[in-house]
Amino acid sequence: MRRAAAIACALWLALAAPAQAQDDASLRRSLATSMRAAGPASGAYVFDASGERVLFAWRAGVPRILASNTKIFTTAAALDRLGPASTLSTRVIGSGSLGEDGTWRGDLYLRGGGDPTFGSGPFVRRAYGTGASVEALAAKLEAAGIAAVRGRVVGDEGRFDALRGGPDSRYAVARDVGPLSALAFNRGLANERGSAFQVNPPAFAAARLDEALERRGIEVRGGPRAGLALAGADELAAVESPALARLAQITNKRSDNFFAETLLKAVGAHDGQPGTTASGARAATAFARQLGARPRLADGSGLARSNQASPRHVATALARLRDRDVYPAFFESLPISGRDGTLRDRMRGGAARGRCRAKTGTLRDVSTLSGYCSTAGGDTAVFSILMNRVGPTGARRLQDRMVHAIARRR
Image (cartoon, rainbow, N blue to C red; front, side, top):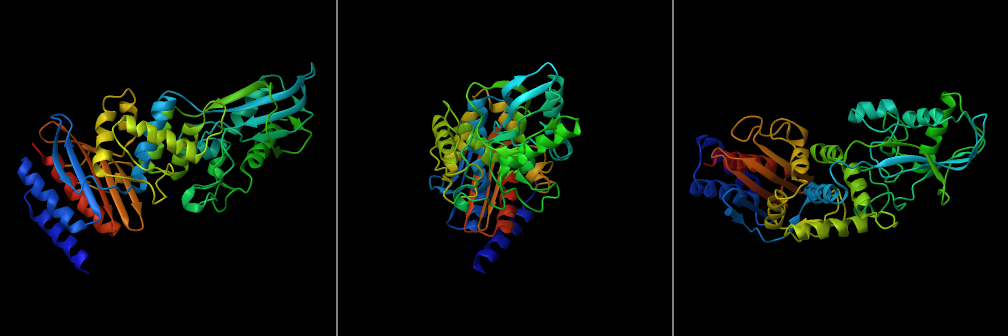
């Protein structure tokens, strides 16, 4: 009750304050009022990236639970390691030979490359606007001259490990994520209504390619199954994901846990070794350290409460990203205050509307917000507000008032 009353009082004071530009002293007083209401398990850090000086620090060196602010580190590492223009391929490779009559004698291996958008054409268009589809693969196989298959379609998810979840679900399928796989089809949903998850993603995807081929009049003799492609098999067709910059945008604007966990495994796949959550977390941590941050990362989405970093380290990473080639793609991936993504319904009026980009984060008793603001004075402010042991609804209101205050700074 005391905490709720304190938050209500802080909100009243913020609302009662005149909506005018703030100098640094009044900014600090305004931010401190909100942070006192948030309680001792919360911290914040605000940095003037234009003038390179600290504007506000409140318990800024203490690690806090990040929630979906973890996706900042996931997407930044993915953009850096893979490249904003890169794509993730879903390929069909063949072990066999093509006869003059168009008969493929052997198996077709549907090899996943970790594309989280891969699926049926209607699902992909509805969910993402664009992406790789099983129908496009079937069309390419027909164009390659295949008129019949005397083997079977085999789904190969060997690019990643076969663990279906992250540490928060003890690596089983998590309701907020879905089954993870390098060969995910329609996000691992068993039907397009989304009422159930697939039990065996690679076998499910193989069956969908089998059906797409049959619809084109290409008979497949054997039944679909899961397995690993034989070494030395030839590529017969491939479809590409949207550019990684677009995948990062879907991840951050929607706070998409499935995309985040899939991208983390893609980051962890290297030198012929399958991508895992653990290897991806190590790679993301290593990149964060290049940016001057030392987070503890356990997954890609932030569902695990062991994902932690201090507000100072989050803001430091955000500030130093501005000097990286991947910064434009990363910046564009963040929700815009009052306009889109998870900030569409926040800060819809006031100084911050349309002037800030930030990543949200929410768990049961955690609310976080970190990003960039263009201030009234024309500077760029970098901020990280990490609130733990709070009610998320009240905490979000405090954060919004703080960001409005930052945006008003001259």
